Amino acid sequence: MRHELHHGVLVERRFATKRECETQQNLVRQLDRFVSHLGVIGPEFAFRPLPEYEVWVADVAFISQSRHDAIADDDYLRGAPELVMEVLSLTDSAYDVNEREAFCLENGCLEFWVVDPKRKSVKVSTPDRKTITYIEGDTILLNVPATGELAVSEIFSTT
Image (tube, rainbow, N blue to C red; front, side, top):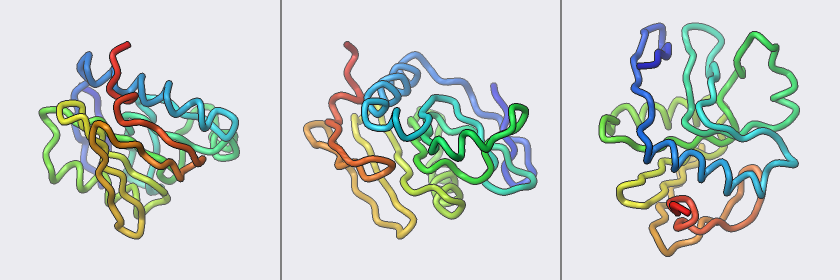
């Protein structure tokens, strides 16, 4: 188990399974084509959405280069990443996912993705609480941090 600090409470989160890791790697690989010149994208990204009593870890996140450069070597990102992607697991409760989404969107996140490997779907939410769910066969219209198009099938490809 890994530990996070949510509202001053120590929370245990389990490590990702093979399928979840592969999905995280596919997200990084596919999105890096669009964002590598704008900042940093990576898996298991720690951040502090609020200054005290909070240390969260996104399954995958993107931050701009200027925000990355401002992080001290022995610290975490302050505020939520611009783009947060959570890969669902069998142990994630709806409450936990909704709490994570709301907290990120309230603290600087511009898009929050819920990626479901079992259903091969991606739900994209924004701070204005607009949500679009994409399923296999759909193409996600990228807005944050760069524009482009990403086929849902590319996220779940095993090749």
